[in-house]
Amino acid sequence: MTIKKLALSSAVILTAAATSFTANAADTIRIATEGAWAPFNYIDNNGEPQGFDVDIAWALCEQMEADCKVVTQDWDGLIPGLKVRKFDAIIASMSITEERLRQVDFTDKYYSGGLRYLAPKGKEFDLDSLEGKVIGAQRATLAAQYLEDNFMDTATLKFYDTQDSVYLDLVSGRLDIVLSDELPTYDWLKTSGNGDQFEFKGESFKKEDEIGIAVRKGDDLKEKFNQALEAIIDNGTYEQINAKYFPFSIY
Image (tube, rainbow, N blue to C red; front, side):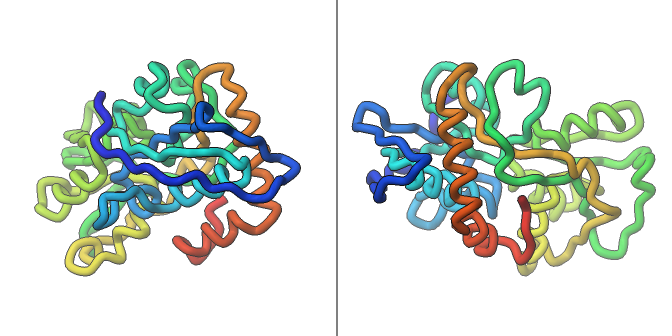
């Protein structure tokens, strides 16, 4: 997959910290995110990647005293791109799963999530069956896998390249109900004229879902990121970033 957008940032150099390391120009860490999963990662009006994932990426780079570059990549191309060295790490709200662990290594979690249904306000659903319903999700996600495992034979499943495309078909009425990660959906439900017409259905589940930073197998970046993550949690940086996007802890 080709990288659809590129965002460059100047190096952020801080004073030495116990868990940091110094990277020279040849050691620039290239970090990939999707850019289509607000509020975790999205592209602003200037074409720059923003969001919780991106803020965490820069905070970790500052802690490590590392030169970093953030790029955006279509979701389906993230792990393939990492494996062929288009970039060195993925910070894109990627769930740690057994299937992915066969291809890449993950750091410790940097937040936890869960799945939840959403549909038009006032409509009721039997969430245990959803027989005959048209259900949407972003492809190659935990939500899509759950739908395939549980509703392949009883409902019509539609998968999309981006979460924005899922929302568009829900708003247009081409989907009855959607399954998505709860946290980005929480943000979308606050959007006037679109998300505010919809609501969560049922409770969040699969809350054991942990989100980590993906690196290549055996890469020592895993330990460097883990040390930096522990440091930004201890020094309050993580809490500040969390509060910028959510009025509750997502760790």
